[in-house]
Image: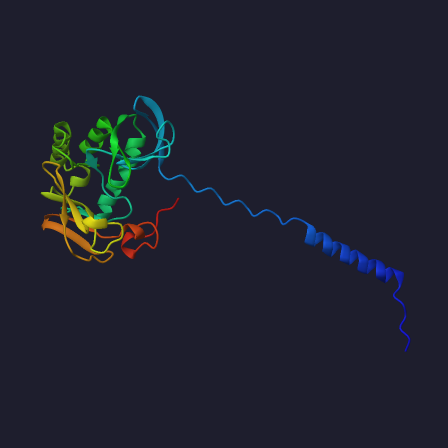
Length: 261
């Protein structure tokens, strides 16, 4: 059987399909959608740092990120006091439980962001590489409200801060609502934990009367969500152990759901 030649209309249709396919192949691929910018962490505020108005973000009650000026991009640690951990309900102080104390911890940064403070860099860094900064009025405000405690590492505590702390303790304000244990745990680190270096595992305790902070070396291997305590009931202090690597990712159940935003 003799095949019939393709009709001109058929050849034109095939040519059109081929042209369309070539055009699709040669056309540039659409650009991938730009990832959404990550929300900047912290509460924006302005303070005076080394004599200059400076934009900052309060990460918690004793840390801010610098967003303008010569130290832009630096993280700072305020000297002389310490606030409670904000990553979850992990503290127990006297008869005040973790949920109550977590609310105390979360109240510190908004209190600072609402004020205007004069601060100065101290020309040195802490063990995490953060610039150490002194903000005396901010420290006094938090300590007097029971949102922070005096924390002295390299010498005696500021007498004015200690006086403010005694006022807060007498009033059972903030973190002292459940009583005043002789010692307060401010950090715990397990044997074998990453990043401890040659110094090894230790717990940090602070004298609630003098504000003196001290490291207590040990060889214990705490498990995530294990509660570590010092002192005797009812005036004891406890801190739930969660390694840093799991505080914000792969959070254990004891921390509850991750905060939004």
